Image (cartoon, rainbow, N blue to C red; front, side, top):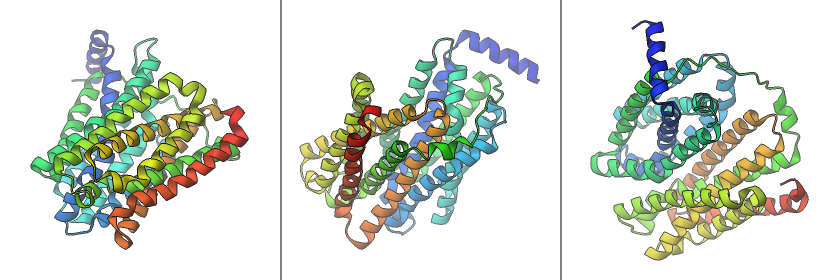
Amino acid sequence: MNFKAQTRNTGTLLKRTPYLPMLLMGVSAFVMNTTEFVPVALLSDIAADFSITTAHAGWMLTLYAWAVALLSLPLMWVTRHLERKRLLLVLFAVFIVSHALSAVAWRYEVLLLSRIAIAFTHALFWSITAAITIRVAPHGKKALALSVLATGSSLAMVLGVPLGRLIGQWFGWRITFAVIGVIALGVAGLHIKVLPTLPSQFQGTLKKIPQLLKNPMLLSLYGICFIAFAAHYTAYTYIEPFLSQVGAVSDNGVTLVLLLIGVAGIVGSVIFSHCGERYSAQLTATALLLLLVVLSTLVFAVASVWMLGLSAIAWGIAVMLLVIALKYQVLLVDQTAQDMLMSLFSGIINVGIGTGALLGGYVVTHLSLAYVGFAGAAIVSVALLLMVVVLQRCSPQL
């Protein structure tokens, strides 16, 4: 089929199903975030397969997150003038091939290499996807488009991670990665059919970044974000072996806990939608306090099914509130540079994720798996103190 015929067919399809491209971007976000978080649910199986420790296997999350953090801005800049549909399809091609390599990895180093390649696609995807989603949305539906994208991202925790774990339990962790690759192949095929040609509209400049980083409130918010997510991932990276080995929780019980954390995130999103605009700073402080309580009592909660369930729900609510509330406050710092602010925000979250996974591995190796909650609690207490200072000094601006 020649290019003109393909364009004509795409146009006809869009007239019949105007919401499909927007929904497809939400599905893409689901796939992209599922592959980032699903190793958490498979860590023990991966470690056993390669005869390494869970702490060693946790390097997957550290290297992945740090690669995303380091590559987001450079890749955005290098590809700023490329046509968006073609760029997205190239991204998916690398993503699919990398998952195939993950599924057949014969050494742990090969698996790490495949995960770093996937991190390249993750970094670029989140640099371009919001703009693409808004552009393909029906007229007057930009807010809905961003909501669909956020929902797809959130569902990765709610459905993607638990389902990935179930597939890993039944068929092996390699099949989980293979299934993600097959789903991505189907999504890419649909993108070919439904996405129109999208010339780049990038007009930003990197000269704005030094100016932004002189803002003390922004630096404080970024600092809180980094510390909070380092604390969260110090424990969350090793939640699967923690539940299995420290709490003697069954395989199905571990899956249920992961599901509860994900579903509770939706509750956190609903809470913010009702009162976040007026009380975003207070919700951030509350979420940090809630995370402190959850992590500091985790080793005790694991002894009781009901306490563990309540902890999982509180954990999911706290983390979602932190993501949304901090993002909202960062966006208010400078409404003329929101793309740059979000790119930096995403990078800092991923630095925190990678640092937390690394610190958690240190605790598991040199102290005990039972102490990952205490370590996370000690770290998040620093974020809470910093938030108190921010509330005292900058409350009129929040």
